[in-house]
Length: 592
Image 1 (spheres, one colour):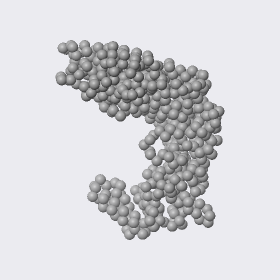
Image 2: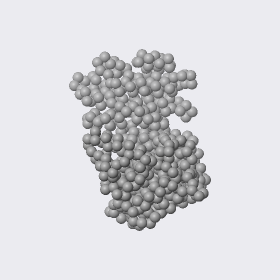
Image 3: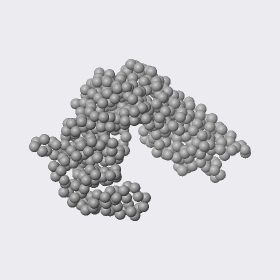
Image 4: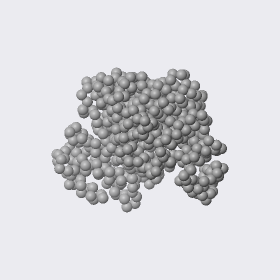
C-alpha cells in the first residue's frame, strides 16, 4: 500500500489540519488502508517505528476495528499475538501519550471480551487477566496506573453491550466474567486502595494522584457492574439495588470495606471525593437479601456512622459534585432500609437532626445545585410515607423535623421570587417537569404534621394576597412589586394544590379536610380577584398554577368515593356558597 512516511503524513492531516477538504481526503485514504490486506503488518510497523503519537493512535484504532469485525474474523493465533504484543508494548513504553495508552488498552479489552470463550489446548486463552496485569502492578507507579486502567477498561468493556454482537452473547460473556474474575478484581482494587491510603499518600505527587483516581474508577466500575442483566437503560439513575452475588458476602460483612471508603473521603483532596462517594452510594445499595437481619443492622449502623461523620465535617460538601453524590447517598439510606431499621441505629436521633439541618440549609440556598435537591426531597418523602407503618418503639422524631423541611422548601421558593426578578435569573417555574417532581415529593412531606403545614400556608397566603390587593388598589404601585406578589402567589397556589393532592384517604381526619377547605377557599377567592382583572392584565404562570390546583382538587374531592358531607364542602359552603362538587365544577368550567 503506502510507505510508512505517507501513512504518518495522512495521520497528521487527519488529526491536525484545520482544512476540512484535506481532512476528508486523509480520512478516505485511511479507510481504504483499514480495509487493505496488509493493514495488520503496517499497523505493527507504525507502532514499532512511527515517529508521532498520531500514527500510534491510528494503528491502535485500526487494530481494534480489525479484531471487532464479525465477517472474516482474525484467526485465534493472530489475536493472541496482538494481545501479547500490546501488553509488551505498554510495559516497555510507560510514557506514551495518554490517548495512545487509552487506545491500546481499549484494543486489549476488546480482544479479551470477544475472545472470552476461545480455547487452545483446553485452556481459555484470554481469561488470565489478573496474571496479565500483575507484572504492571509490581513495577513503577506509571506501570501500576496502566495495570489498573487495563482492569478498569476491561470491566467497563464487558459491562457494555455493543450493537454488532447479539445481546445473548454479551450476557453470556458478562456472566462468565462476573463469576470467574470480577470479585478478584474488586478485592485487588480494595487492597491496592488500602495500601495507597495506608502509605501516607504523597498527594503532591502527580502520579500518585493518577493511581488513586484509576483505582477509584476501577472500584466504581466493579460495583456498577450489571450483575444480573437488568440495567439496559442507562438513563434510570436509580436502580436502587445493587445485585451483589452471594459469593461476595465476605467483603461486605467485613466492616473494613465500608470503613476504607469513609476514611478515604476524609483523607484525600475534595476533587477525588465524588468518586469515593459514588462507590459508597453503590455499597449502600447492596441488595437486602445479602444479609440476615442482624448483619444488615450492623452494616447499616456502620453506614450511618460514616454519614454522620461527613455531616459533622461538611467542608468538602461545598464542591457541587461532592454535594450531589452525598445527596444521592442520603437518599439510599431510605430506599434500601426501612424506617424501623433506621430508628434502631445507635446514633439515630443525632443523625436525623444533622440530616434535617443539612436539608434545611440546602433548601435555603436554592440557587446552589438545584438538581441535587431531588435526592434530599426523595429521602424525606420516603421517610414521611413510612410514618404510619413503623412498628418500632424507638422514636423516629419525624414529627419534629419534617415540618422544618416543609417550611424551608416553601419559604425558600417564595424568597427566591424577588431575587430572580431583580437579577433577571432563570425562573424555576419555567421548568414545569422539575417543579412537578418537587411538588409530588412535597405533597407527601407536607402531609406529615399537616396542621403545621396548613397554618404556615394560610399565614403566607394571607400576607401575599393582602399585599397584592393593596398594590392593585394603589395608583403608585411599581410593576416590580406586583410581579413579586404574583410570583409568590403562583408558588403558593402550586404548593396548596400539591398538599391537597397528597391526601391519603385512610389517614385523613375531618380536621384535615376542614383545613383543606381553608386553603381551597383562599385560592378560589384569589381566582375571583385575578379574573376581574383579566381584561387589563393577567399573569400566565399564575393561571397555569390555578389549572394545576384544579387538577389536584378534582383528583381528591370530586368523584364517587368522596363523602358528600366532607368538612371541606362545609367550609366552601360557609365562605363561598359552594355547597357541593357540582357547584365547584361549574366554577372550574366557568374559569376555563
